[in-house]
Length: 251
Image (cartoon, rainbow, N blue to C red):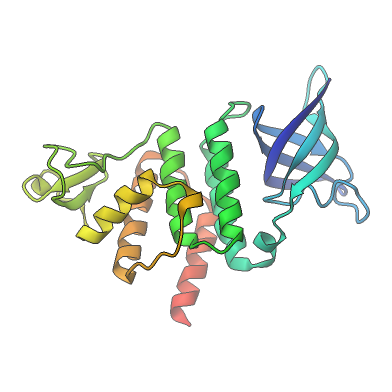
């Protein structure tokens, strides 16, 4: 049976000398894996369209059993710049690996598909990669059922008094309740405001962002701790991205 779908390449791996197994995140079928025969050959018509972060139309043949085979494909957006810039490659790879880890095969997720497409587009257009990453992380967590409470104190509900973020309790703690989690992360008022903003924001609304280094550090610390607690999976792409950031700071 032939099926046509709109999708984005989120992962590839070599199969034999000339083939690829390509993981697509699609609008119609969710996440699927397909065999792209001959895609590693220099003159293959499937070579370009099976590059990471590429959006396209994919025609797949499914038999009675086994993996579907990619028969034809047409590029919608190549996103070459995301693969030619090492920093952008690292950021995009982290986003797609996170999405891959937190979704099941053939689970249709139109919200996440739109999120991924828009985020990659904005990343290619030069939007702040840190802000885009945090929006993406928060949205993926939310769809997965892990939404931190950022509209007030997670214990008493007090608003505009957040001084700590409790990973264990899943949200902000105010000054009066901060003793309830001694491991809670201290945050500034600016970090609390930005976190609330990012949770509501969509990637296409990211404009010029001017955040202090302290705020950026606290944002990364809070979201990283929350991900580690509720996702608990080691991501190779994140480790690579961390090493790159350390190298930048050492230069």
